[in-house]
Image (cartoon, rainbow, N blue to C red):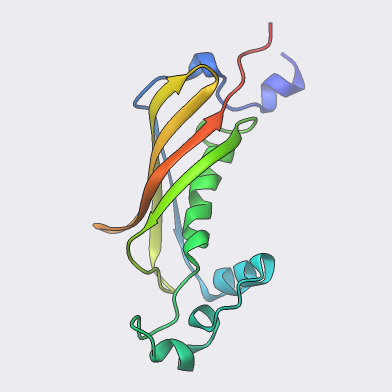
Length: 144
């Protein structure tokens, strides 16, 4: 087996509709600060407690894209895993994520169309869906 095959996640031939994967992460203040630095999004609703107290949320909230990045964690490490290429993502943000919340990201393989694989995606805190959407990835066939 080649190093490529050893490191690669699922190949197209290994996938089937209905496959699922999850990733859970408790959001910390450090996560928000680091994400702000990496992304450049310094909106005070994420970083300034005094400002955030005056918003409809009444406290600091995590960046929506921080939660969305947990979907990328699944795609890049679990399903399909290493070697998969993100092509498209549609997201609907439904509820805030606060410091201390545990976000559970989940993807379900919905369709295989050639090398393009579509997933239903959601992130939840308990029974509350904080975001949902769909993603399309490109997955390679097993080398011959």
